[in-house]
Structure formats: C-alpha cells, structure tokens
Image 1 (cartoon, rainbow, N blue to C red):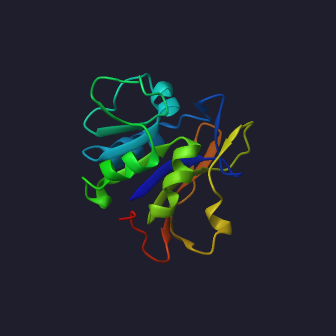
Image 2: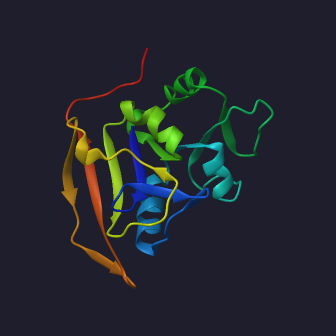
Amino acid sequence: MKAILCADENWAIGYKNKVLISIPSDLRFFRETTTDHVVVMGRKTFDSIGRRPLDNRTNIVLTRNPDFSAPGVVVVHGKEELIRELKKYDSDDIYVIGGSAIYRLLLPYCDTVYVTMVDYAYQADTWFTNLDLMPEWELTEESEEQTCFDITFTFRTYRRRYHASLPE
C-alpha cells in the first residue's frame, strides 16, 4: 500500500479542509500515479474534491456516517470493514490520499509514501507524520528542485525499511 500527498516544509497538508496549494505538476503526478488503481480517502477529503469519485480509479471512502452514500464509490464505516475491503485488491494498487485521520490509520500498512515537498511553511491545521523523524522510513528518491511561479518543491519517495501488511 502507498500514500501520496503534498506537504509543506513542516509536513502540513491542509487548512480548513482544503489542500494548502495546487501545483499543476503535482496534480499531474497524482493523476498519473493513481489512475487505474484504488484510492482510499475519508469523507471530508471526498467532500473537498467535489463529492464525486476520481475518474478511472476505484474510490473507497471511510465515514462514520451510516447514511452516507455516493454513486460510484465504495463506502465503508470502520477500520475492520475498510481492512476487509482493501484485502480484495493487490496492496500495490492501493493509494491512500487523505485526510490526516486516514493517513494515520493506514500509514502502518504502507510501504511507500510519495510526497511533493514544498519549500514553504503555510498556515495549516492538518499535518502528515514527519517521516524524516521516523527511523522505519527512509528517503530513497528526491527529484531536482522544481519551481512553479514562486513556489519551490521536490518530489520525494520514502520507503519503509521493513514490509508492512494488513492484519489477518
């Protein structure tokens, strides 16, 4: 399983249920990486992307609301139900796309994290775990520094030093 996100230099990922910044090459990377795969998100993230499934992907939404439904989306209501659903897919095809509670819940099962790291500190209320401080994670790839207008960023790949898998 993999996670994919855009974070600022403090590992912030959002503010008031919105992403901090929209970078065209990051959006292209996200689309190219997750197309034809499974994306897992929380209901707030689903709301933030327009309350519609992402095209050409299996969309799984975790929510506590028992009445929530959306066309074209697999809805699950708890961790156990989510784990059962995820076992239907090859773990290499699963991408966790947010928000922070879903990242925290599924990071222990991820073996790769793709981070678009922005060289700026934004006002934020939502963060991802700082993988640079976690010994089980290793930065294995980093692109050359890129610029979009006055925004500087890199694409990073972190890999878990040992394999994680979903519970039986």
